[in-house]
Image 1 (cartoon, rainbow, N blue to C red):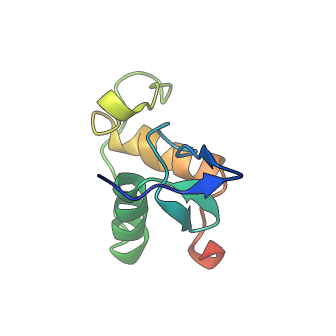
Image 2 (image 1 turned 120 degrees about the vertical axis):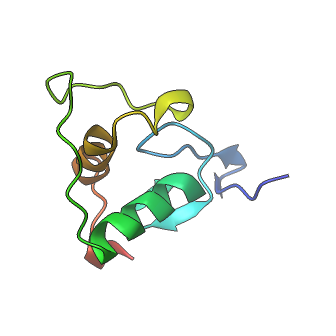
Image 3 (image 1 turned 60 degrees about the horizontal axis):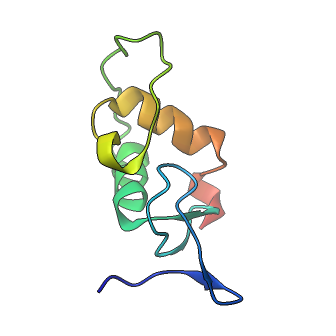
Length: 85
């Protein structure tokens, strides 16, 4: 079983993709997948390929790997930041 973040007995969800959050990462509750994705993105200063859908992709657990540009954009939109650790 995966570790999950809880608040008053309720399981918290990742602010980026809606998966079960593993803790508070980079300023928001996030899952291990989004935590690692954001860490790699900022450490390696990655420039992702342009979104083919007008930067309007839905980022949910089952498709979070389809569009990296939109996933990174959503990380920032929900408040992830290098300083938010």
